[in-house]
Image (cartoon, rainbow, N blue to C red; front, top):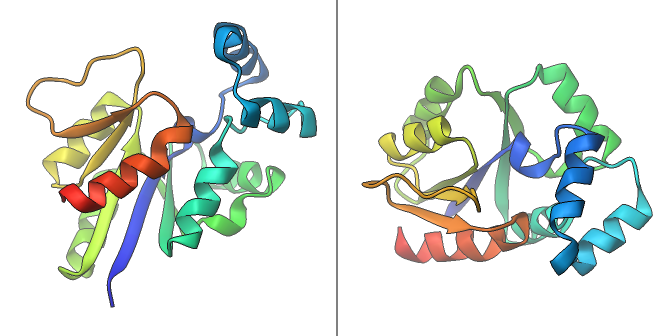
Length: 171
């Protein structure tokens, strides 16, 4: 059976604070997304980025196992997921500090019929993931991808599903 796993980064899915969310909304005034308007009207206190729920629903419908990589304490991350009602989408949470060893362990335990990809905005995580041979999607609209890295690039969370589909074809 063909298995599929995607590793998502916490800071790619959540704003760090209400101030960060407000700054993003002000920056995006010229191209307000329908999903952003819908999510912000449902829960103004939500730190979930626009389009995250839809991406998670898509990945689950395509039978992906979803792992979250966090730079926060596990307890804090679990609470954040539960508060946003998205905890049911995630199979596991791994820490940024142990990212290398946990991804290596995942790669060793998975067979050749297991597709694993990562979606990151952090430069160091992208570099490490590509070094480990993981197909990567970069959410860094304001940064160029370093030369020599084979990474798909998206501008926002809304585009993750398309990039993962492309990565499955390319890798």
